[in-house]
Image: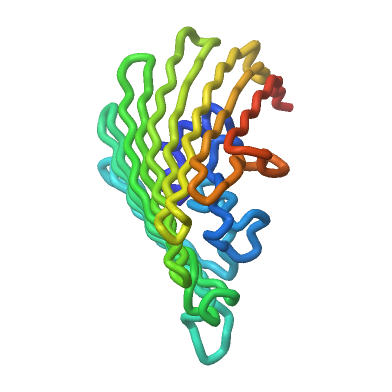
Length: 241
């Protein structure tokens, strides 16, 4: 998911880890997940142990990748195993990608059920602007809880030093998740001071529905809000040594 789709996740450029997905979806029930749904579509990365991975060379703009994670249970290769596939294609200003990942967990269906992700994205560059669209689908195959994410964003390079961008995400749970949904907006500005130093400011705002009386929860914030809204602002400097 990261290798093939992260390039289309505009929120990660604008707001870093705070732009990734979480929201009011604790009943998704990802095992070992602190909130049950943090990084539910794996776009911020998630380890798959005992894995082998292959990434093809780039051929006329096309590349593919595949990964298999061995489950480690004698007598049942399928239990707790994982698999992932990705494909990317780029020509001129256009880039396209798609990915699929399925990780089984001991806690789900005796190791035979898990969390399945798939998605597709596209990017188009025109002049100093870059536009991205991204779709991901996440399902717990044990309880059929499912979340669809629709995302669109744009970045603009005003000068060699100054850039800014915005991103919108709609996260929608199915009936197992009471139809809960979250709207999330990200804005960010970056100014480069030198080759190794830049300053930035960013803001992330999430508003959720109240079908199941959920609380808003932005990714990587220590806890949910007390109501259906949450906002994070950040001002910082990065210096690379």
